Length: 143
Image 1 (cartoon, rainbow, N blue to C red):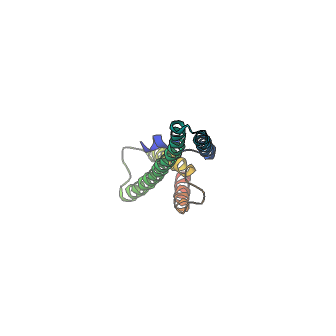
Image 2 (cartoon, helix red, strand yellow):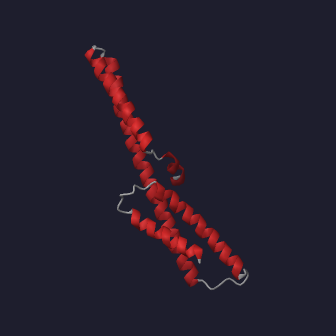
Image 3 (cartoon, rainbow, N blue to C red):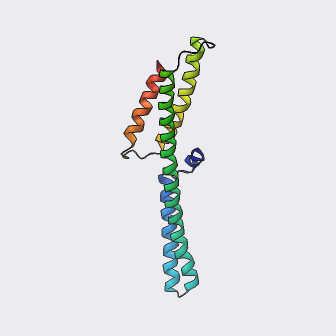
């Protein structure tokens, strides 16, 4: 579910469009009030508030989903590192097959974390944590 919400993250253009539509609806509401069409004014003012409310709820849900995807990828990385450290080397797989399997798993986790990191604001205080995790994952997959 969280990965599906990542496709709905409103970018700056979508945010500006929502602000613009809300401002237009508000101005129409003010004009309707001046012309004493109060039913239409109420509709336009409610529409203005509804657009902004929807934008804020959407931003909250997508930001929450972004952080949860990033946390899940980081948790998966920690669990994978513990598993590699504690588990004896598999006997049924050759060394090359085990390494290829591990690289494929790390590439999948790296991709998930990159998608989540793209949706985290550059000035967010948690961004360095996930960037460091991504760097660690890339170093581990390159060896």
